[in-house]
Length: 126
Image (cartoon, rainbow, N blue to C red; front, side):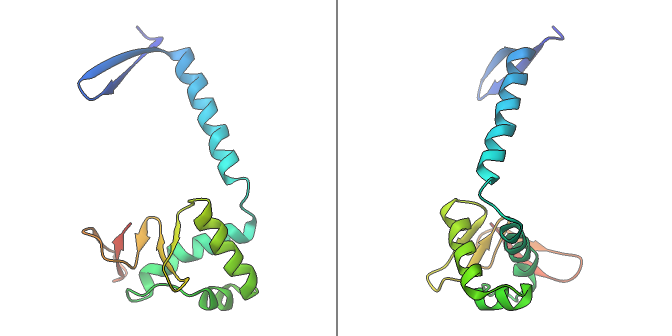
């Protein structure tokens, strides 16, 4: 039985060979790399900044101007990056004003899930 994996889905158990499971996992890593391939170092900087700073922004969304200023990037570049991150459904959502309101796993929008950090910051979970 050591070469078998049991997977539970609802009330059923499926028996999968370890070899097939390894193939599936290998494909999953490649899929993730393909999804990330459009992101430059600046994309990662903008996304990481949004996740880090949204909880510190007193419940307000983050403007492209603020992100550009704090990261010392051209505003037009930041706007393009934000649009690309949202278009690719990649952890980021812009509100109607074009500001970052969701940067998974946090959001400035109300949700039933509130996060509080030991630093005193508080934000909703996305």
